[in-house]
Amino acid sequence: MTRGRLSVAFSGLRRAAFGLTAAMALMGGTASAQQAVPDTLSETYAAWTVQCRLNEEKQRQCAMTQMLSRDGSGERLLLVELTIGADKQPSMTLLTPFGLQVARGATLRTDEDEPRSLEFFTCVPTGCVLRQDLGEADLAALRRGAMLTASFIIARGGEPFALQVSLEGFSAAYRRLVELAA
Image (cartoon, rainbow, N blue to C red; front, side, top):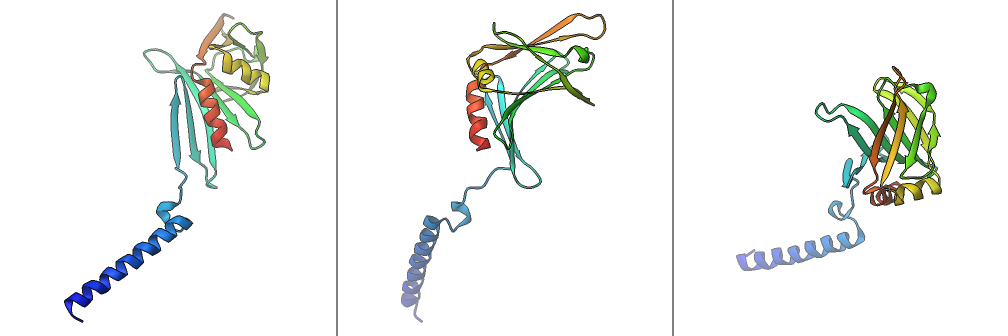
């Protein structure tokens, strides 16, 4: 085959290959046209972070969190986590430090709303856990609020101990959590 015929032949092959690649891309047949789910995801919405990871079964698990820590030492004082279960029920979990009167539970209050009582669920090596399923009224209060106050009683001495959780960015973070849980 002469050089001119060879060039024409390769030119035809390139056009055919490009046409095949374009057709496969339109049909979603190439790896680059498929959307991959990231192994991890982290997005920040003011005071809240939405994080997702793939579990061992390659299913996405997401949560929105806010951590309060002691100035200077960085010691965790409170971790607030919202998740949406497989039943689409939102729930809030708080991980507190040790040294609280667990028998007395805690109270949560959004701005000037009525406080609601929570019981401690369990204690784990990193702190003690409170958990609450959230209804529409709870979510509405968190969306419109500016501050969530978590109040506890210190075990030694019985002094009250309150932590302020900012609700800035809560609505946007929760919308994103719902999208990712769908």
